Image (cartoon, rainbow, N blue to C red; front, side, top):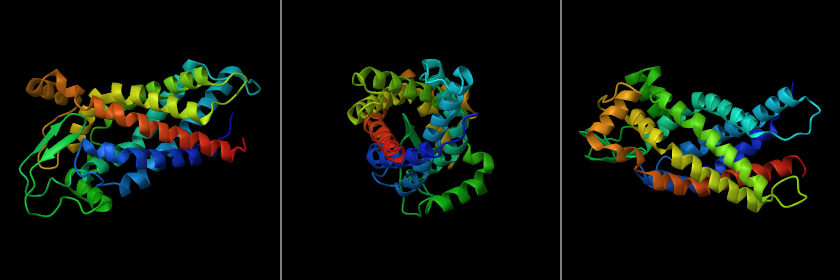
Length: 284
């Protein structure tokens, strides 16, 4: 059985840090405060991406070894990439759900203790009424402790079902296009894509994945932001039904342009950092 290789995790951390730095301003356009909450995702989302890419690389090798044997030099088939992508979704959501929830809550700092109401608009966009009272959260640790105190351990995993429905197909639509585009753009006679191909393939893959994930991202973000002052949604289906009844079908596609646009530079930066670091670590 293939042993776990740590270089994928290290390269994933570098790529994740690069994607956070590039994408955070665009990420916060859909919520509040241009650079609010940057320190937390920079420290945590980089680790999250490290796990995602580390799991992907190792899962893909394990699947190929199981299917084709240890000595096979055959590259992964599309089905192998899709299966490894699904594994990534299953593993990372368990880690990423609390991270994502805390990030969204920290970006809601225009919402205060005395505010009357949240108005969520598409893909987690938050417009709120601020009054002259203390912010809800002083930082990540205070945010976590407040959620645990007010909502319990399940509060940290609010929206986890929607996140699974977003991320398992989302990762398939991330890694499969990336592999196909890298293969298509690979120079003749080369065994690895050049960095320009990596950048372009990663950017396009990010646009595809984030663009198609928008409807479930809307649901996920609404569920995660729910419960601050009141609980409006009983679950995924109730959130979908209530959102559709009050705002129509278009509500699930608001933010698609922002998601697709931010997906390109973020994913390009992540895959560039990942592949470049792998080349260094593996002496290629």
